[in-house]
Image (cartoon, rainbow, N blue to C red; front, side, top):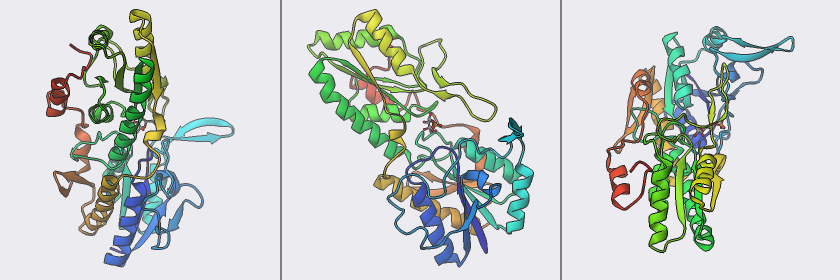
Length: 361
Ligand code: F6P
């Protein structure tokens, strides 16, 4: 193994720089290998100046930094790339060009750090002959075959901190406070922030809810003399029989963006039950800032393991955490079934046992 490259794709997640740092250190120090950085996801293979040499100097001091020194792109699908031609926007398949560039660079392996969208692209490139190694990243924690993705723990702690802050003001004003959290179609952030922060109601995509059940829960608290309530609401949660709420429509290359369910629930609580309600959408504060110790450590283990996997020729595979061990699984297996909250699992059962409502009773 002589030449490696690494790119980060999709939404950023705290810990990306820790992966890059560990991959660079392992490649250079353990294998005496060159390692290139590809800027802005797969776009870097197409853009002038999109590729640069990584060194021990380049990665010095980046371990505690959020974001990614490589940059990332949410619209960087080489199989469907938006390009402007003569002032007109068109969609082009640029995969052939990317594959040729990878061959010209003589890459022995391309480490792709991304969520399900980016890893799916990586898998498609692998099927076309690119020696790809995957590293699972996302605050949503929704990738199959790994118990955790890095970035999730940092996002979760930001969400828990927000619930702690909402508690004091909710109590002072006797209000219902709704915190809308990210996670796409998985409810891990809302569930665990709700458990860790002591929410009264948790709404997640995996458990459709009814407004009446939420009102019942809040009224029970009021009857006991507790005049405030905290709702931890996943952006992908939806009322039974209804669609999820979107902030933006998707297009040919970009999936629709969830957002707005918190406001919808607040409107119903106010109109149907006269409850004074406020909504906070935590948004990208969940993705920014310095990674937690857990994420730094997991990302470092993933980055180093990815280089070892490349050296052993494990192409088309992804590093993963199972229990306490770093293992590798095929990208196909990782992408087959997305991870979701187990609605019969012990976390949900524990929450119910301590009186948290999921709005479905
Ligand atoms: O997948 C990570 C994530 O932060 C989701 O939780 C969220 O729905 C989405 O990305 C937001 O995307 P964007 O950064 O494009 O607004």
